[in-house]
Image (cartoon, rainbow over all chains, first blue to last red):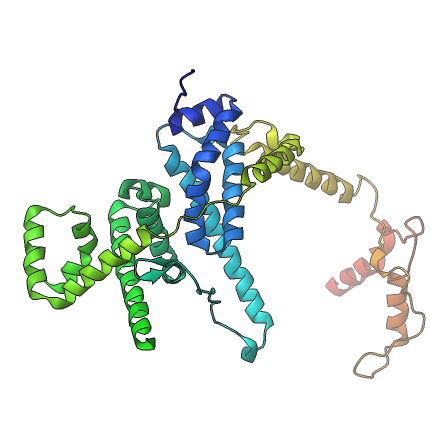
Length: 196
Length: 187
């Protein structure tokens, strides 16, 4: 029985640069769910997240020659996805502003749609949507750093490279994001107790 | 250690990246501060909740959709200008910008040559934008004061719709009378 060779990410991207498209497929299989998880936490909707992940892989296909083996492949692909997600959020913000400007003052609705939480699986003492809403409420730069650290479990150094921000700033952002998150979840906990 | 310093370093404490002396200071503060103990417990719980939260995956058929899109992207024609000299510079410009700049300069030269009069010839006076709007009847200005017939006559003559062949040409002798007047004044 032939032994299955397990290539590293770097080996795969180098093979893909030399024209091996199977290496590209393998990279897609390795990273699609990790990127989906990251981007979904970032933008908050599944469809948009999936479109962004697809765009990321299209970019990878088109710009494969831009990758240099001095950095980790994961850092590079997360940088692409992060930039695309950021652009999408900027577009969304612009769309929202123009939509609000088209409405009359009394028609403006600033409520964030709340997903149906019935029969939802509990994650520890919180529901999945409570965690997602808390993450979504964080400021963008805190949110990104927190997702990359606590969900994607990347190192501080990798996050610093992906976001192109000094290491000390990343540590500080993650700390502040966690403090804000615990405040929000504490509030959720308190609200639940009062309703019971 | 005070509460501010504690909160500043709470993540580093959780991740066990503090020096031993700092850990001791932390522990001492924790023993005496209930608020910071609650914050530490809250942060630990939040991080744990996020870490064990659901992992989202792409929907089924993702690869097929991606590869179909790549097929389309591959078939798309790429402009020659976009492709030429990929990563190279022409006089410090990217090829596509160099090409655009060159086209702009050529256009300016062509327009300039087209506008300048040829040697020895005079330019026909022509107001092409006014074609089809000649109104022989005297017009009323907004103030309600009718225009003087002489002015009207002069205007209508200058603004007349002549084809390029019929246009009035300025001849060297046309300003003779005016020059004479100046001379007369000098005298």
